[in-house]
Image (cartoon, rainbow, N blue to C red; front, side, top):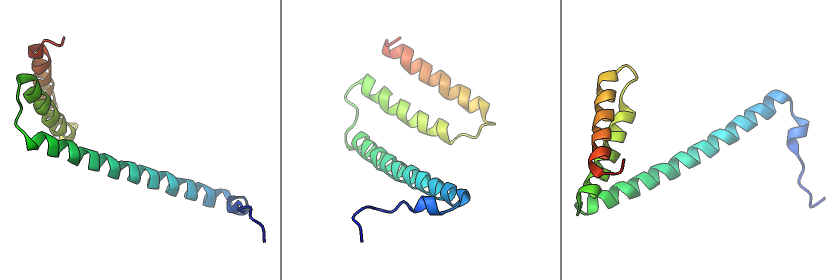
Length: 98
């Protein structure tokens, strides 16, 4: 026996190697998505825990919710996408950040 790991990929065909690579990438994507969902839950819990104490805080919460809504819109719903964009532009303009 040796203490060196054996590279099993060398003993398999290209198709099997590609399938393994795809499984590894998908596992990484799923792990990242789970971490992202957990982070999103944490952010939302913080946002719901206390009411906004200023207009900029309220605008930040509104931007977050509008972006969630926009992400759920179908690509054919251009009217609502334009409305979300207009409201986000208004929030930006009214905050004096532009």
